[in-house]
Image (cartoon, rainbow, N blue to C red; front, side):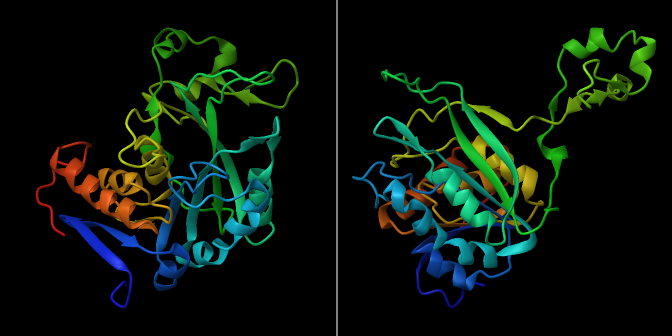
Amino acid sequence: MLESCEFTTTTIKINQLSCTVICGDSREVLKDLVNCANLIVTSPPYADARKKHYDSISPDEFTDWFFTFHNPFFKSLLEDGSFVLNIKDKVVNGVRHRFVWETIQALSENGWYAIDDYIWHKTNPMPGYWPSRLSDGWEYCFHLSKTKTPFFNREEVKKPIGEWSKSRLKNLSEVDLSRHNSSNESGFGRDISKWVGKSEVSPTNVIDLPLVGKNKNHPAVFPVDLPLFFIKLLCPPGGLVIDPFGGSGTTGIAALMAGRNSVIIDNNPEYCEEAVSRIRREISNGKGSVWFLPGIEG
């Protein structure tokens, strides 16, 4: 699949899984990766942020710039594949710039279905003071797809139902034994009896995760558990995950932890080198549930 690739490529293998790190522009690299990915999950450079570390894009120009990745992303995905975009907006002259929403709207008008909006709630946000707003405690994670019915496996991301269920479900009343509609006639309802015997439930679309304490030699590292959540939810075991703004390789680590293959792409040689080193290092250190698998190559 990448045999004719002219870019600097390093593949790390662990048993039947592989993580390939490619140094190059993902718009060019993805020309060799057509109709093969189950999931693209990524966090691109934010508008006018960290200019010392990578090329910065003005909020006014961000939508046009990001749209240059539309065709490569779209063509690389399988028909039931998904694209998850982790992104944060920016305050310009005291006002929230809406380039994020403009970007999603542009993608939606050109073939992408906006399946859902997820929120990454940062449990340890950076403190700060601004005269007319509070500190940011969350970021967007948009789920886009080529179809209205993408691959979706909620079973892998279920969480414990909670201690409340032991007492609440112990003695059910008559109204708990069938669907009970909301008393305020909102149209919503629930059937409590269907929860009896269950130990796990589906999570919400709010993901509670702390910021990464150390920057892993990269200025914008998201926690491994963020891509891991979406990989488990939207990519089948043994499938292929692509991160076109790969940075320090977090998505590659998450993919290996989840038993998926991955391709990590970045146009910065230093970040690619760090990604390779970090993935090898964290595999050998035994971090994550997959590291019981022996052997590292590449």
